[in-house]
Structure formats: structure tokens, C-alpha cells
Amino acid sequence: MGQRNTLDLLEIFKDNDALERYPAGSTIIEEGARGDLMYVVVEGRVRISLRHQLLAVVGKGDIFGEMVLISPDIRSATVIADTDCKLAPIDQASFDSMLRHVPDFSVHVMKVLAERLQNAYEMIEP
Amino acid sequence: MTFQNLFNTWQDMRTFCSGEAVFEEGDTAEAMYFILEGEMEIQRRGSVMSVEGPGGIIGESALLDRATHNSTAVAQSDARLARLDRGQLKKLMDRDADFALHVMARLALRLRSVDARIGARIGSAGRTEDKTDGTA
Image (cartoon, rainbow over all chains, first blue to last red; front, side):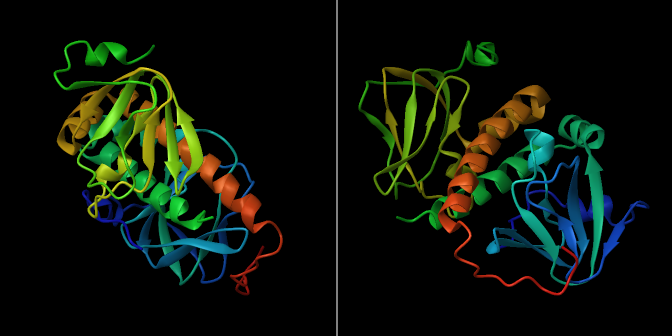
């Protein structure tokens, strides 16, 4: 269920010096919590789920947690490291700056949202 | 309404009468629509997913590679929409970060409301994914 990338975020973040490491099985984001970071997966894979129901598996070069930067609210889903992971955190200031200065970034994020929405619609089958 | 001025000289305007469908589930998704006037109901398998008003964006499936609309959009009132293809949306979003953030936020709101429905549907019953042995 990976996102088809129009933009190579890995290239931008692979040498980032603020990478966070999460061991397999650890919780990165918890549904209902406050948060102010989104992440780019630099190494490894994470699972996004809602009440223990899997919504998406997200891998290298993909993003997650973007919702809090777009529409501030509590976290809408839980994210758990599926393998050992290296993640690049992006805060609001970097996100806003990327929207303005990285061509394709906004369309990339929009595509991720469209894809999540598509998957979500498929999950509410009557 | 904010961002309406971006479309002052937009060439591809579409108007719909109340009850008319803009696109239907299964249609090839060639374009998105920015709502300038009117209300659009988003339906899937006959049930209402959300209602989008001025400033909202519909038809976002057109951004994806397997581009088929997975919902139906029906005008709930007379409506005026700006039609945008992928390239046009990209151009607008790259040129105007505030507009980009605005359309993302509108999409995120829809996603949150659908997620809430999924959450309510699952409730506490359907534990289909057991948590691994990590911290909670």
C-alpha cells in the first residue's frame, strides 16, 4: 500500500542529523494524543492503525503523521514500528517552509491524503 | 470566501443544478473541482460520506495513479465549480502555499471524519490486529 512518490523525500532527508530511531514494535504515535511532528521514513517500515485495525503500511521515503500539521487536532491513528526504523521528524516550521520552497511537496502530501481517503472509503463498506 | 480570487479568470468553470451529479463512483477521474458556490454531497454506495461547501475540493482521486472516482458527488443546490486537472492543481499549489495548505486542510477534515466513522464502526469489538510486544 505504498505511496507512489512524485517527490524523493528520501534524497532530502537521508543525511539528516536529527534522525530518530525506533525499535520494531515500539509506538511512534498514539491515537488521541497531541503531537506536532510528521515523519519521513528513512529506513524501515511502520504500520498505521485505528483501534487495532490496520489502515496502511508505510515504508522508506513515505510520510505519516502529516495530519496534525495540516489541521491541528489530536492524532487520528496509531503508528507502530513494524521493523527497526529511522525517521526524520518534520515540525510545523519545516513543513511550512517545504510547502513554500520544495516544488511538488504540497502535491505529494495532497496525494498521500487522497490515497488515505480512498482507502478509508473502501473500509466503510456498508 | 478566501481563494475565490484565484479563480477570477479561470477558464474551465462548470455549473451544476441541484440534484445533478458532477461525477459518479467508477467514472474515470480526470479532474478535481474547487467549489466556488453551492453544496456538494459526497456519496459512496448510496450513503452520504460528507457535504462540501465553498472552498472545498472534490474529485481528489484524480491525483492518484489508478484514477477512478470512488465516490459520487451530487449538487445539493445550484453550484459553480472550477475544474482543475492534476497539472493545474500542482501549479496553483506550488505557486500559493496558503492555498495548498487550505485544500490539504479540507481534505484532512474529510479524512478525519471518515476515520471517526471507521473508529465508531470498529468500536471495541473488532480487534483484528493484535498489538506487537512494544510499549503502549
